[in-house]
Image 1: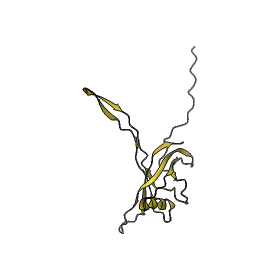
Image 2: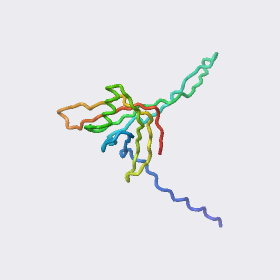
Image 3: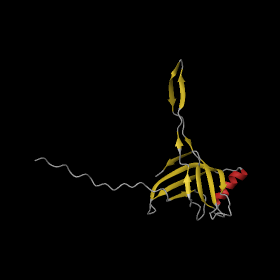
Image 4: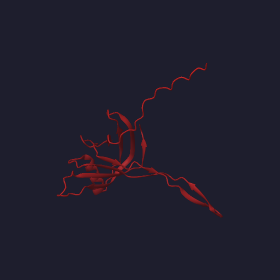
Amino acid sequence: MPIPPPPPLAQAAYYPPVAFYFRVAVPGIIGINEGSFQEVSGLTATITPLEVKEGGENRFMHRLPQPPKYGNLVLRRGMLTGSSLITWAQKSINLFSFTPLPVVVSLMNANRGLVASWQFLNAYPVALKISEFKAQENTIALETLELCYDYFQQIY
């Protein structure tokens, strides 16, 4: 009688992380609600190949990798009065005085545990937008901060 194979090892059930619980940290910017954002977008990196034709043969093309291009990091939240983050952005945009800072975006689980973190190096403001004011709608005033950066990397 053949010996039955051992049972498979028990594995924890896989659940993809949710994307609605996150925090943003900007070292050097202090404030109780500075890292509370409604939306974070722009975590993108793309490589566009450079197409080089081979000399003498028009049908042969070499596609060579180029350095990656990164999208701007876009942070959106309810307007916060007295915000040191917005003061930093206004100083950069209005006075053309830039102080690049690192920005860390962390994805959290339901128990406030860290799932993943990304660090954006040498970030500085390139756009600051305040939402439209409309008397006929009952909406919160939003501010959108767009940051340019050198590159980002996953640190956790």
